Image 1 (cartoon, rainbow, N blue to C red):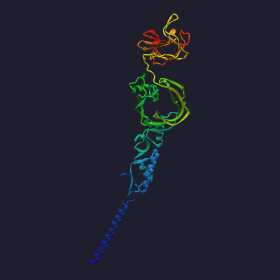
Image 2 (cartoon, rainbow, N blue to C red; image 1 turned 135 degrees about the vertical axis):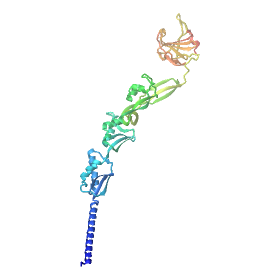
Image 3 (cartoon, one colour; image 1 turned 90 degrees about the horizontal axis):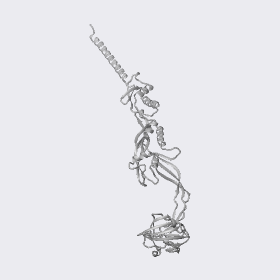
Length: 454
C-alpha cells in the first residue's frame, strides 16, 4: 500500500520550489527593467526643442559657449542667441549620446541670433547702422570735415543736434551701411527757411556769395525784390538754406585788423554861429588786431566770438571848433547890413560920364563878404565886367549884387542868412583895385544902397 502522506509531502515541496523560482525570475526581470530605464544622461534643449543628448551636464554649457564663439568668429560680430539652453536628466542610448564637437555642430545649425553692430542716433532716432564703433566714428568725422575748408584753423567742431554712437543688436547684417552710404544718409538735405537782416554795404551779390546761393535763388525766396532793388539797412530778407539730417557747428580761429575810431573833441566858440565848424586837428584812426572765433553752422557764418584784442596803433583825437550863436533865419528880414568892412571908394550915381549902379568898398583881397540880408543865391560865377559875381534874391523884388570877388563860397539855389559869409574881396573883371562892388536892385532897377543900409 502506497504511503499517501509521503506522496503529499513531496508534492508540496515541488510546489514551493516552483513558487520560489517564479518569484526569483520576476524579481530579476523587474530589476532588469528598472536598470534598462534608469536616467543615464541629459537631454539638451533649445527652448522646448531637444537637439541632442550628453552624458555629462556641464558639456552642454561648454558646447553652447563654443558654438557662440565660432559663429562670432565666422561673422566677425558679437551675437546674442535668441534661444535659451537647458538640460534635463534622461535615459539615453549610447547611440544617442553626443560628444562636444557633435553637439557644437548641432547647436550652430539650430540657434538663431541677433548681431551686435553700432548705430548713429540723431536726437534719439537711428539714422545709420555701421558694422563697428570705429566705422561709426569715421563717418561722424567725415561729416564734420564736409564743412571744414582746407587751411582753416578749426578750434572746435561739434554737432548742433544730440548725436550718439551706441551698440545695438540687429536681426540681419543686410541693415549695415557702408561708410559712404552712412555719410550720404546724414548729409542729405531738406530746405530750411532763414531770415537775414541787411547791413551797411550789403548787396544781393554779396549776400548770395556769403550764403553760397545764386542771386536767382535769392530772388525766388523774395518775390518782392528785383536785381536792381535798393536794399535798406535793417530790412529782412528770406534765405533758403539747405538743412541736412545732422548739422555741424564749427569754430574757426582767425586774426584780422580793425580801425579804432578816433575820438572827437569839440571846442565851443561863442563868437561864431552854430553852423560854424573848423578843424583844429584832424586826428587819426588807430588800429587793433583781433583774434576771434568765426562760428559757422554747415559752413554758413552765424556769429563771431572775440577772444582777444591788441592795440597796434593808438588813435589820435580830432579837435573841432564849433560855433554856439544861433544864426539868423535864412530869409529876408526887410533890412540890409553893410556887406564888408571897407572904405567907400566910389559912390552911387554918375561917375566919369557914366552911371555907377552901386557903391565900391575898398578892402584887401580875401576880406570876407557877408550877405546883406537873407535870401536865395540865384547867381554865383563869372559875369563879364563884374568878374566873379554873387547875386542874391531877397524876395519882394529886391536883389543884391556882389562883384569883383576873388572867391565864392556859395552855390546857386543855396539859402543864406543875413550876415553869412558868401565870398571874398578881389579885383576880378573890370576893376582897378581890390574892392567890392555892391548893388541893391528893386524890380531890376538899381537903388542907392545907402538908402537901405542900416
